[in-house]
Image 1 (cartoon, rainbow, N blue to C red):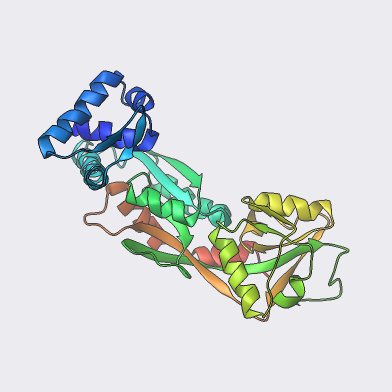
Image 2: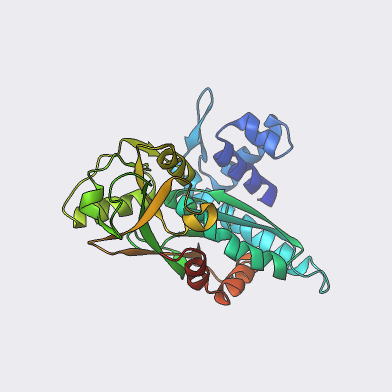
Length: 305
């Protein structure tokens, strides 16, 4: 068995197509197919379900894929550990996934990381909480920013970063012009635009509406917080958004913000990494930087509500 054959397998699982997988590995399709057949011969099991085209992996192939991803990740970590000289410092790319609601505070984390490790580069992707977990498990991300409350995080290590608060964003001349705060049950009666149900933020909000004894049927749904804000700004809409987003956008012209009460609630957002030892250098460096930050204070200073 060669690591190159494991690379073929992971590429095939990622691309779902023999030709695209071969191109991603910079080899011909017959070379990739031959490498995977050699894996099957060595382990004595079928790895790929074959028909006229790629139809997925067998159960044995899925187990082998998990090992392949781990071995290749360990290979990369070994090369990073011993392939750099002492004067180079940390190099490479930090791959970070973040739920949409946590995107504005990401710069409060990536800024100090980049300043401390100028030889690194970063990729930040907007992903659902489920996709962050999947990509971490597949060694396609180094860390994630996601919710630590409400849904289980098995097989991961977590570090709380800040508490997400919720505010009503509504037109300046809309409902509640004489109010300093508003209840969730009252908000349910407004023409709301909210995130789509596959977003954990939306599932959290649905739970808070239920705690207030109401259900909500949004007039518009999107997977983009900025789209929510633009609709409210255009007039005739209202939305419930995370307080931290106002640090990026400010309060859009023509709108106002009201704290939500009855219930007053927060959700914890934090850093998530795979539960493994030793941690990769890039992940360890990010954890070290995070331990020295107070994101809650930074967010509250930017957006007092």
